[in-house]
Image (cartoon, rainbow over all chains, first blue to last red; front, top):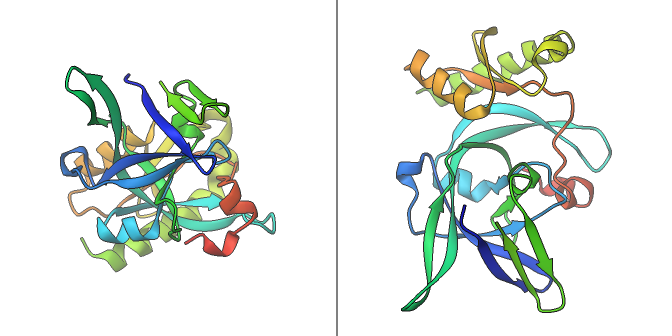
Length: 139
Length: 87
């Protein structure tokens, strides 16, 4: 797999991703995604669910602040990651399509990001965060 | 696909799933089950395979899948600090 590199923005590792109902419908429209090791499952904003009319496919139990898990709808979608690759012409963003579909709950959008990349995906690779030089890499 | 019908299907399947979860855990923990009309149709190793089986078997799109797990999803900050913001 290619590596995904980025610079930390206000201590947040953010990357650009594409979302679609299937890999065929992924496009160049990008959303901001936060790499979040505190989240066990990749999830998406409610806004993305509505914009792409994602399939409602399951209900999941999500841990709540009052320690009582709550039933939440979850949606199926495909995910692509915009990877920065260096070539002779300079850096270029190429879309790396993940082969597996995700089934994930939704959260209400924030101003900073639309997707949380959780440990279900991060545990498949190696994540390095360099706080001295403010960059991160996932490979 | 009728959205309201799908929502009823997912809800009723989930109720059945929760009732039977304890008995499913020993043999199927970590797998995904394809469900229709409150019945468990087949078990799969991952969500991809369960979704593919559902699309192949039910052209009307009325089915659901459930991960066989007794551990709730933890959304970290969104679970513990801003719960009302979870959709």
